[in-house]
Length: 234
Figure 1 (cartoon, helix red, strand yellow):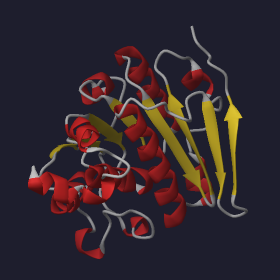
Figure 2 (cartoon, rainbow, N blue to C red; figure 1 turned 90 degrees about the vertical axis):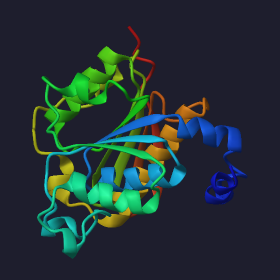
Figure 3 (cartoon, helix red, strand yellow; figure 1 turned 180 degrees about the vertical axis):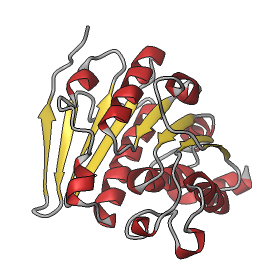
């Protein structure tokens, strides 16, 4: 207990030891270990969330070095899951890391995330996001959506009992906006931090502020607005 208290000492004015124990008993799935997912995973590990399910099929490439916390010159060509495990285990070896080198698909989505209490969407494909949202709905698991492009980002807490996710992406354009506009490190880490804050609030039974409210982020002009999407239940 003494080591537990010392590790999370700087959390304690915000997160009590009882709440810290709740986080330790929780499971979060992070789908995608790129710009968003890498930072989200690290924040979850430092928070002390007990089990992290880390899902990605890709390898570390040179173009990842500008923004992805797991991407270093030493691990170029490695699986992102392997790089993630090495980094996170070095940060917090007390946690359980389930690393799954898998591409999310309709055939495996339910199996990949079924043990999670909540899912962090860090994908960059509209098709994959739709698959993830549908799996979360079927399993009754909430999902914290995030996306980025250039100076801009958005975050939304998706209640599986709502139909909000069905209307989030109306376009069939497979290429995400981040692939068109680019994605610098400050946007990725900023949006990931908000996703993890919403995740933490849910796990600690605090009201998620972005439930049915889309947070739109403009870091160029430092403008932040929330857009009411309605309950969209039924």
